[in-house]
Image (cartoon, rainbow, N blue to C red; front, side, top):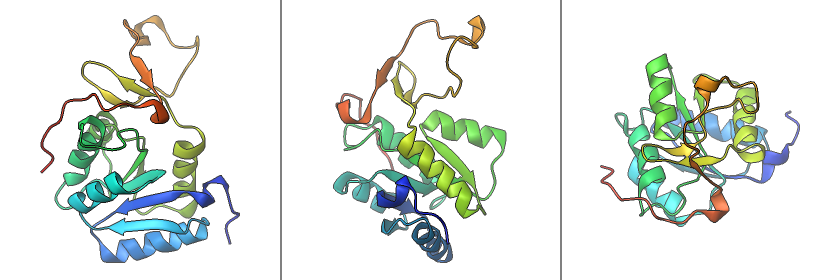
Length: 183
């Protein structure tokens, strides 16, 4: 049995349209000591749950109901109707190619995970968003977690931003982003 970790007390929202996979996720969450899990099977239910519940992270299928997983993340990040635009999001998919990773990153996904995955891989992603969250950036054309994982002087001049964006923390977030239609 897995060792209990700091993630054991997390409240998790899982959005996946596959009944069998939701059973697998329940087993993984239980093995990680996470008992506060809400499961939904489509994007509108995920949005409603995210707006009415208090979750520490959302785990969402990229291809949820014909690719609405990415649209949902964009909506969570950019809509004034989103109660928690800084909600950490871990996106899952059966296959990841570079353009899909870039699209997920640019939508505001914190972490991504390829199916099938191990319990240890899920634990690492949950620990990353729970114990080492990246700051959020609000810029003219992007809102989401800092896409750069490197920090400090090792960044070359061409990798540095020309203008420093505004960094936001989840507890300080105010709803000031324009709204757009999700579905």
